[in-house]
Image (cartoon, rainbow, N blue to C red):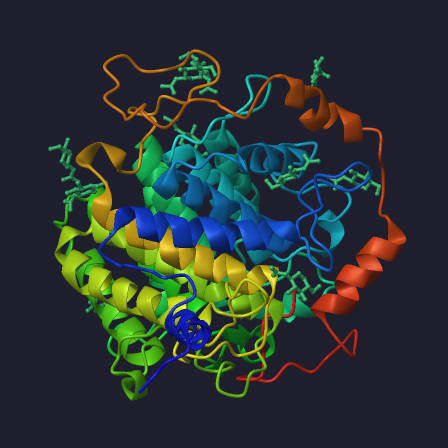
Length: 473
Ligand SMILES: *[C@@H]1O[C@H](CO)[C@@H](O)[C@H](O)[C@H]1NC(C)=O
Ligand SMILES: *[C@@H]1O[C@H](CO)[C@@H](O)[C@H](O)[C@H]1NC(C)=O
Ligand SMILES: *[C@@H]1O[C@H](CO)[C@@H](O)[C@H](O)[C@H]1NC(C)=O
Ligand SMILES: *[C@@H]1O[C@H](CO)[C@@H](O)[C@H](O)[C@H]1NC(C)=O
Ligand SMILES: *[C@@H]1O[C@H](CO)[C@@H](O)[C@H](O)[C@H]1NC(C)=O
Ligand SMILES: *[C@@H]1O[C@H](CO)[C@@H](O)[C@H](O)[C@H]1NC(C)=O
Ligand SMILES: *[C@@H]1O[C@H](CO)[C@@H](O)[C@H](O)[C@H]1NC(C)=O
Ligand SMILES: *[C@@H]1O[C@H](CO)[C@@H](O)[C@H](O)[C@H]1NC(C)=O
Ligand SMILES: *[C@@H]1O[C@H](CO)[C@@H](O)[C@H](O)[C@H]1NC(C)=O
Ligand SMILES: *[C@@H]1O[C@H](CO)[C@@H](O)[C@H](O)[C@H]1NC(C)=O
C-alpha cells in the first residue's frame, strides 16, 4: 500500500501531536512548554489597564493558574511566566496580606481564599522567587490560615468551616470538602514548613472533624462534597470530584511526612485515599490508566472550575510520591499513562496542540480553554518528578533559600540551582507594590455582581440540596 507523504504526516500527528516520549525528560518538558504557552496566549491580566491576577469571570481560578505555573517552573526550570505569577500573587494579596483584597473580599468562599493561600504555600515550598519589598510567601500563606481560625464554626455540625464566609451568601449554609479539606491541607503544609505545632494541631482537628462528620469516610475512604447546616450536616452531597480528594490526600501526605511515617492515622489516610482516588477517577473502562473527572467528562458538561480540578490532583499526586515514598511506583505509573493518553487528546487547533478535557479519548474532543490547559500543563509537568534529584524536594523554613529579609537559616542545604530570580527584576516592583491599590475602597459593583452571578447562577437563594451542589464560584 502506498501512503502519500502528507497523509502519513497527518496520521502521525493524529497519533500524538505533542509527540510525547514519556521516557524522555526533554520530550515531557516540550509538551508542558507547548501547552503552557497555549494557556498563556489567553492571559491578559498583566496588560496595561487590566488587573493582575484577575481572570475574566472568576477570582479564585487566578490562584489555580499561578499554582500551575509555579509547579511548571519548578519541574521544567522555564521561568518565562514567573514575572506574571509574581505580579499577580502580590497584587491580589490585599491590604492585610491575607488574600482578602477589598475588590472581592465581600463575596468570597473560604475555598476561594484558600486557593490563593495554597498557591503562596507552593511558592514558599518550591523557593519561588519573591520581590524583596514583598512579604515572604510563607507569611502570606500563614496569614490566610489565621483568618480561617476564627471562622471555625462550632454552632452547627459540631465544627467545620462553612463554604462561604458571610451570612448573606447562599453558600454560608453549606459546609464543604474544598473549604475544610483546604484548611486541613494548608495547616498540614504550614506545619511541615514551619515546624510550628499549632498548625499540626489544627490539621489534626480539621481532619478529625471531617471524619466525624463523614465528609471523609475513614472506612470506605470516600470523600463527600458538601453538607447543609440546617439539618446539622445530616445529609451528604456525594458528588465525586478530584479536587476534594486532592485536598485531603495532600494534607495527609504532608502529615505522614512530618511525622516520619510513624502515625497509622496518616498512613491509612494516604493509602486509603489513594486507593479510592484510583478506583474512582481512573475508570476501569480505560484500564484504570487515565485520570478523568468522571461526573462531567462523559456528558461533556464540566464547568471551567471543574476543568482545573484534575490538574490540582496530579500535582498533589506528584508531591505525594515524594513525601510518601512507598506510593511512588503506583502514582508514577498512573501519571505516565495519563500523560501518554492526554498527549493524544491534545491535538486540536491549527498546530494540533490544543487540549480538550477527555484525556481518555485519542481524538481531540473539540474544546479548548485556559482551564483545560491548566490541567494538562500540570499533568505533563508532574511527570518530570521522576527526573528530579534528591535536592529538589519541598523546602521548609529551615532549608528555604528564599527568605527575603535576611532571615535565612545557616546551614541551608536547599537546592539553589533553579531559584535565581531571573525575571523578577526590580523594575516589576513599582507595578506590583500593593500601595497602588490601598486607595481603592469599597466594592466595584459591576464586578461583584458578575462574580456573584457567576457563582450562583439563577438565584440568590438557591435551595441547595444534598448531592446537587456543583462548585459555582
Ligand atoms: C504577560 O505574561 C505573559 C505570560 O507569561 C507573557 O508572555 C507576556 O509577555 C506578559 N505581557 C506583559 C505585557 O507583561
Ligand atoms: C480593584 O479594582 C480596581 C478598579 O478596577 C483595580 O484598579 C485594582 O487593580 C483592583 N485591585 C485588585 C487587588 O484586584
Ligand atoms: C505558631 O503559629 C501560631 C498561629 O499562627 C502563632 O500564633 C504562634 O505564635 C506560632 N508559634 C511560634 C513558636 O512561632
Ligand atoms: C476512623 O475514625 C475514628 C474516629 O472517628 C477512629 O476511632 C478510627 O480509628 C479511625 N479509623 C482509621 C482507620 O483511621
Ligand atoms: C522525625 O525525624 C526527625 C529527624 O530524624 C526528628 O528530628 C523528629 O523529631 C521526628 N519527628 C517525629 C514526629 O517522629
Ligand atoms: C519526606 O519527604 C522527603 C521528600 O521531600 C522524602 O525524601 C522523605 O523520605 C520523606 N519522609 C518519609 C518519612 O517518608
Ligand atoms: C482562548 O480562549 C478562547 C475562548 O475565549 C478559546 O476559544 C481558545 O481556544 C483559547 N485558547 C487556548 C489556547 O486555550
Ligand atoms: C526574622 O527574624 C526575626 C528575628 O528572629 C523575627 O523577629 C522576624 O519575625 C523574622 N521575620 C520573618 C518574616 O520571619
Ligand atoms: C543568576 O542571574 C544572574 C543575573 O541575571 C546571572 O548572572 C547568573 O549567572 C544567574 N545564576 C544562575 C545560577 O543561573
Ligand atoms: C511599596 O509599598 C511600601 C508600603 O507598603 C512603601 O513604603 C514603598 O515605598 C513602596 N515602594 C514602591 C516602589 O512604591
